[in-house]
Length: 546
Image (cartoon, rainbow, N blue to C red; front, side, top):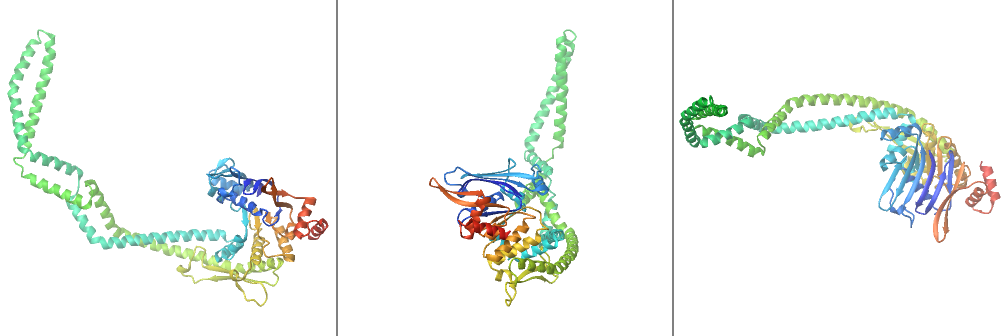
């Protein structure tokens, strides 16, 4: 419910502050006074985008504030998007030429989040909303809401989405299997080629080192022989040096350190000598094995160039190719499981679809009867109204996310005129009354909130206007109703009355929104009746209307 509304520097509105009551609230004024600005302000509260064209000329920015009560439903929505749960929110929108800022309870919020919070709390109806009734899917949605089928329909839609996702999985798997089947021989050739190589990075590195060794075999042997000979020649000299240091150490402690170091060095040299001899003995007699290594490395290079991967990449490729081949075996098994699941889901879908069909066909006449009664109350007394439920053949290609049904609202405004689809026959005035009839029927099934009527009085007058007014008045028992109207019959039944006026002050045009009571209200009703100075006429009109 909209508790408070503040508007500042919005187009022609310099400043307006409305404390809004429960019940039936009307806004009246001359054509062009600026009533549409009120609608614009509310649209901005509902998350519509704004621009610099909304800012009052000469002002730096425009601003709209509102206090909205939404109860536990609003509290839950706030929690869902990460804000502190509260049953009431303060919304503030600042529109400037460069950027816009939006706050809820002092915290920044996006327009999509604002739209989510205010959805269903404040419902703005206009000619555009009335014309949504012309869409068959909206007509079906209205029938389902009236029959309370939302839980069953939600279950069906979830299952329908699961079914569609499953079909997508099956199609992807079918494509993969078909592709793998076509490529099977080529894949097997690739696998064989890679398995013959059996790529191994460690082996490749080892072969590269071995190749370098064999290419330089003569150089290695020649220098190893020189080293070994040098070690052997120095062996006797080192032995003699060690013996002398050992004798000297008996006379001077400093010689003991030298003896220890030389002794350790001597045996390290012996160890190196043994290692060099062992390495020399392990070298091949010649480089015959070099050809085998070159051939093996050439196979590595060939496949790396062919597949544009390094050795690690070849290992990964082999795994990928084997997975593709395995898909032909495991894929067929998985495919059969998915097809079985498809049949199971299809059966469940049709079970739910048949439940929906049965309830829709059975419940449509009740809604049809209520709508005819409501339209009679609204002055369309001779109208015929029929809800045609068209159930399609129970084939999977006929199934939609709403089931198997199409709904058509058929209408005839006068006797002798055949029933035709609503979109082909209803006038704007008739459509607005049909919309009002729908809202009246659903008021006990809908959460209380704010319902805003703009242009609901299009194409009506006289006794019909009075009936429409009474219907809106009845709606205000369950909703807070804000109604923009030109009709005195509607304004007369309001609990609160605001006048929208365009005034020129100091060469500036401004739109003022002021609450009127007592004599001021009588003056506005008199103006609407076409005799602005006849307050007696207005008073009598109010008395007879009420």
